[in-house]
Image (cartoon, rainbow, N blue to C red; front, top):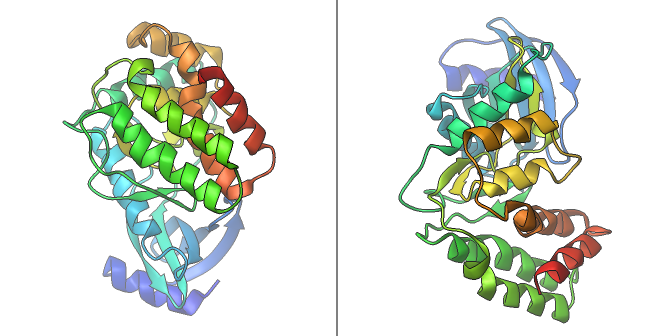
Length: 289
């Protein structure tokens, strides 16, 4: 880690002289390096990546974290600053200690998510593009969810996959056909504030025994997207779904729309990793074509 340049950059961004005493590398994702910093101003969480590849990624992530924090219904780490040191981009956040799950952890998590989904806007989308993983996520506002989902989610990634030889022409045509059918498949709902990438790797148990969410891909969308994402890689505890359904019931047929909502993250993973995600995408398409 470029400690001297980082000391200077953090001091400038926070308007206080900071000296990093120790930087402990901790588990991160596929894109970012992550560190626990012990400094003269306390402990912080630091993310770093290549500023040349992702010049605005951390700016967008900071904005998304602030959007979630503004809802004030679930714990989100406070973003402190972003910037660059040498050719490395960084995002500095408060460091939140892990704890032991409270007995009602899943019920509380579901209740908090339902309150987050109560936050709305007159449109689906966001005021700027951001990222899901390392892929640009377009958020051009639309008042119709099906149009938003087709033009900002499915078709950009379908085109990317086709251009990079991840899918063939018949699969691309199936995706185009599905997009034309979306208005008949989705029930009308108001835009909801979404985490956007809510799987088991993007939450932890905080010191108070309740959920902390992070690494978002925020936008205002159909709330079934968040619920479907929680089911994609193993799923959450069944108490989470029972509680959410009791507080803010999903429209009838939501189980049959899980694959439809999971198609977007599957296309993300297909573009990033290839492999078996091709078959997963094809399996979903067969359900709806």
